[in-house]
Length: 602
Image (cartoon, rainbow, N blue to C red; front, side, top):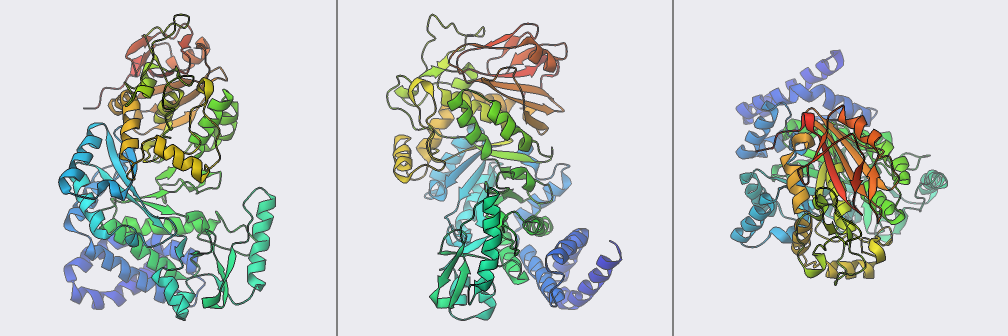
């Protein structure tokens, strides 16, 4: 510590020693040792956010007390997980292993009899799912109101027994107008009124709106976020709709209360907590009030709390982070894992256009992130067409991933005029091929419990455009067609069956352990390509978007072969680098340089 943190530390400890050491001397001593390691970082972040406030020291003291309370409430099993993470060089970096397939599911999928829950988890673990993320309802900061701590604790226990990890959502940017904090504000409590952006008349809202509209002229969202609330006799900031009120993070009490909720989720056994709405937590007059530097400081400050109390827990940035530049939020000091929704959307557009040039120019620049971090990429579930027919298109053996769950998902034999590739690959669906590519590109591939709007099959194998978010009627139609049963279980099984071979190939190859991935040029505008480099080897993943055989030029192969050859991981076939490699129509291949091919993960 430098002089200022040292002085503050001695005063804090001096004030709390007498109060807390008598109440729980051993726990206070252990916690004080933990706090000392990260005190300087915590103090620096809090000063950056709240250092100009006259009551900063009082709020900071209360924050330290709340951290101690959360640490005391952390169970012995979770403290042992923390200790293992701190003893291991990579800490909680399970997400940088090949065995890191995730599943996003409604909590209903894991409610009911313990035996049934256990059976489902065993099925998932057997096919490679390690990370289960339980989704929350929309619009409320209180995740306990969506899923009880008891439900999370039971699920965490089941998952941890199988060496799996649990994730959950926490909305940090706003609460519903029926939240206890909002109700207290409406009842006239001035402390909780200050927790929201409430103005008695339109002067200040208009100043904020001017900055928001200026940002809209530069390509951002520009709607007036304020609504009048009679119970408050004022205008309330409501970015997500009139019934969701934005929290005022310029008040340190708001940060402290949300920090308690964050740590309560961690103490329920959550290994991953996805912070929803983080780009909107900081407001300043004259700006667009999204993705401001203060939002990044708040994210790092939340991470500092977790590192002190529950180091086995990771924070995950949601898909809204970055507003087109998600890499801005990927930082080991804040979010080691972050959603990357741009890639599936860009892949869908590339498949529709049968051209990857736009993807390379728009997505590739933001795809590179620190090697300590990883992108979470959700695999889209396409609604089946119901009968086979015109959308049956060719795919590689690795892309087909085994027989489907219904007649419409069965693979067809190659046409006589279109012979299979030299490794005997068969035909499948374009959706399977694109998901196989996303499996190779993602740091953490995530199986969804619902079909993705717009991912229906069209004639000739094209992916239908659909809306950005899909209309409600179309979305429900796709959900029903995909077998959505309220829990997403049938959807999950169908996608797992579709991708079984590719999932197995990813799981056994340690080239997926850490390292970096970059979108690259396959030498033809009709082929998606991603290059993964790690200390264990190099992998070039390719997917053909064209309805015909397409050759990868020799110079592209030679660039990555370094005088050797490749092994196609999905089929096990040897691939020489001295002649062009032919991908069948809508085929996929994962080429690993044979001279450095990783050993299988046991």
